[in-house]
Length: 242
Image 1: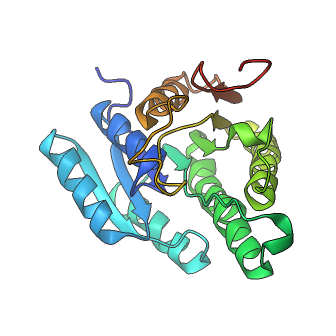
Image 2: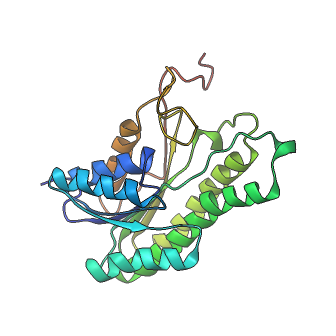
């Protein structure tokens, strides 16, 4: 039996990077994955890849910062499968604009994508999971919630907030059998940083490594929660390294 056999999972930010890696890994473990992002062509390519390996995947074009888009996304799980077992909030924006040059519009865009979207999706997940008396939410945070980089005020602020949101959600879900976790990756090869996917840094890890931890979190017994996890390449300077 595969570890996520017949589970239904929604994964946001699934057109690339960590979200796409988690979608592949969940599908290989037997989950039915509903993948969401704004880039429809990339989602279609991922669906074809998963189906070629014998998995089940449904693409849903979604801007997770918009409430009506999120409503439609969760309706797919409700209408197609009648349940939701897993939600992975992986959609995100990284930005390295110096604070004194960052526009309010860009700051709000980062907040909407990294934080507001996490709230909207988690709220809908709770609405589906509460009657089930079970379910699991995994929020993708960042090492920046422990140790930020310079010129990252929008990204850092939202990742600190995601950590706090995770703890609040975990309390809200506890009485209903719902677990909530935050997975904080270190430097990972993704498209968040322009050029990184083409020229990965030596101190970066493949997104598949992060996906392995997501699978572990998702496959724990219902009564067990890995509240938080920090995973990083050993070459990345952190806690005295480097």
